[in-house]
Image 1 (cartoon, one colour):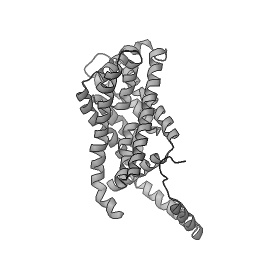
Image 2: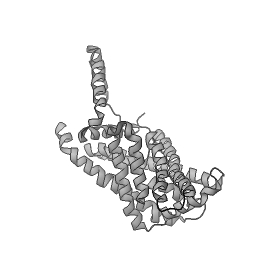
Image 3: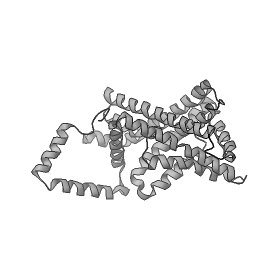
Image 4: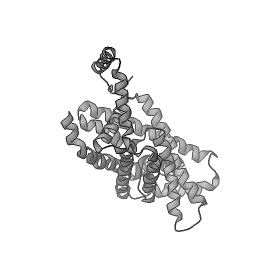
Length: 297
């Protein structure tokens, strides 16, 4: 059962049933119209992209907490392949000036897994679930969004700690990779807090932009995710979930204190990602379609 609010009211369901009963051809006609809309996806206007993402957001808000939790935990585990992929390339690439650019393609691996497998990643929800809130800015909707954020973020971090513990205390990864994994983790979490915050803003913007681009990316979705998540790594921007794997890898080995992890890394990066994904990108995206959407209502 939906844990927040249903996507369709009983009145809407009855209306659909009665329409179908009175006109058996109505459903096939509606399906044909929907098919035509999908075929025009490559030419989606900003308003239609907004509508696709808004509906996705409503679907996420209607999912059960259990479903969100397990999906978020899986995302926290899978995003570790961003850190691991980068560590593999850093370990085996030659020591050259261009190696840094190639190395950062490894960072895209975890994001490709999470986004293309439709797992719950907190930074995606900074735009996806916020758009329904902008249309219906009620206390109830705000509560729904806040609960989803808490569940997904907690699940992402739990998954990150689970996989980091596996990396640290089992032979699941070769010994040759551990120095690179340690180096990447120390670099990510030992930035000054203010620097971590500001570098998290572009990361939040880029992830939200990926969400905005995917409805019209069609077959190029893979390369869209690859390109812009590579840019996050190449720009040395900070991401709360991928960074949580690095934070956890140090934390479970006693190499990072709780206070430093929380106040030096986690809270500043979380705040920066939210500012980038919601306060910047989502507000701009809403601003360009607001008049059309409200006029339609």
